[in-house]
Image 1 (cartoon, rainbow over the protein chains, first blue to last red):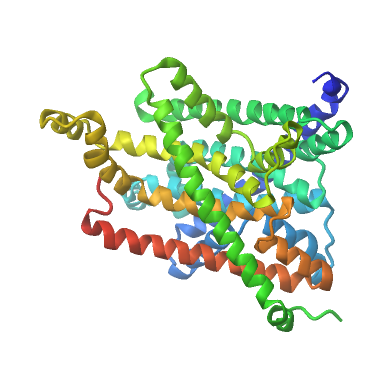
Image 2: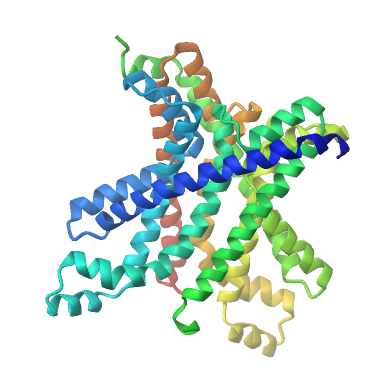
Length: 215
Length: 224
């Protein structure tokens, strides 16, 4: 453990890089989630099918394979040649986006159709109904789910070390290869736990706060 | 000009790809079994009357659920050598996926236990069944029905998790694909086919699981 002392700083930096990657990806995933989530609740069957295909395809393929695809295969047929960081952000966003779609969809569906009909009979259009009536209620379901997705993305960010992005996991492995001890991996475990566990507690708090009965 | 999709690559490496899929499925199956064992143990600990056991169970579940799988692969494969314990890559991967999956299994089992109504337990007790007998004959069959869809999701996520075992050189699907990719530089074809393989495996598993649920539980399927 004493060997590890000089490396605490870079381990913390690794944790911050992991957090930043996950947070940025969460932002993009939320945009994907809201847009495709509305498509997924559309009246058009073909539109819903597109959303389902996206969600199923992403959720049925390991994140690692998606990452490989973006990092190794994308440069072969496009002009893009993403850096490990860009590839990591892109795949994690698309991956998290699929889960976000489900969170948004279940949020929108948690608001009963009677509210849509009431709004319709008052002459309120789709956009206003969605924005002022459905969205505020849908968020009660979507936000706690989003916290769970963020935790998964934080853990998933560790996979990006495999394409050579140096975040918390890779930092720990690098230190291990320098000092040949178990302690860097254990320290990384503690850092992951602290990040994810406090987020999970926060998520549970938000969920309690947003419940109907609590008001 | 690079050929986008090269089917020849696929036919030439068919044997390797199939063996990779077999290893991936074997790894998935083994880790499902291990995670069920750990899940049951974790649940017994969490549900124990003894405070120290409860604490142990909670610590196990929470620490596993809040750390990435990759960490356990590294810890078991590289870390244990420090204590002169050496497992083969395959066994390390089974242990890593199984021990971590066990925490999720424990939560699934706990949820199912609470879903089975208290009346059932009281009725079993009133009929003179002992707690263990009642658990095995009255509660577990109902718990299985409640937990069935969640168990299916967990199995799928374990199968997807097997791709991570490629980092410790378990010759499964992703590992084989990577090797073919490195040798031919046809990354698009290789990873497209790889993704389709996982997609098929997962969709077949899902369909199979739903079919089993329908046949086994019939119209009781969605009920608690």
